[in-house]
Length: 368
Image (tube, helix red, strand yellow):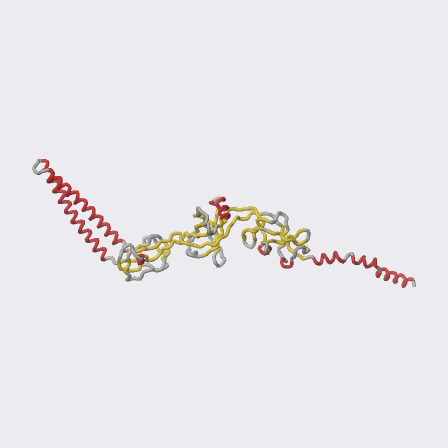
């Protein structure tokens, strides 16, 4: 009977208001721990990152020349294959030679005639000078002979110049490459009449692709950072259209002296080695100018969000998620450089971002 009474007392105590309060004390704490969102944190610490700027550029040959006919005539032969690499001085076209060979022969004949007349005039001058010295003839006759000799010498010089011009014109019938490079499409067909004073003069183009140049533009602020660094330390790297990195870095070789008032940018040019001609003139590429290093914070690209106010990251502050506006710089691989908005020791949330809301309780674990 006593045992039954004691059991009833325990049941009554458990059902009493005091017993219920004891059980409720553990409920909220356990619920809060269960509701906290598990996230991975990345503790911020500044590190050395490259100072880099990106722009869209376009490649061009380091030398681009037009190959033109310098004499009039019928185009007889094409001595190269379109698109071939040629050396400086290599023959590309042949213009009809016969008219210029005839012209050269005529010029040489005229020169021979002028030389014969000059020889006779010089002999006549010497003879009359001796006679004038003996007063056998008047001085006027001797002076006239000397003047005729000088005119004859001038005629010889003119004839020699015409021979040289005829030789030069004959040499122009062989159209050669002024530089080494890659040939373009032939713009005139064999059998066409070409002349140096109209559109038919342009025969083809030549482009030197090694080294190759890349033109691009930087903003005024970016150009100021680049100009403030050491020129020897500045590197230019390229990313191709397929996303691959060009294996060789280049250097700046030109920057404009004025800012383009329409775009607020400064035109620049870089030179890169291109021994295998992997880059062709006219390609669009992404240019990355690396101008030294700086201390900054780096976060994964996936951790950077954006809203109407700009870019931000989620930071764990006192166990709760908080939005932190940032000023982002450039990408470094899969990371993003943060120039402003974070400080050392901040814990940036790098996962479960879509489930976060301001004030959401988070249960953190350090990123490995």
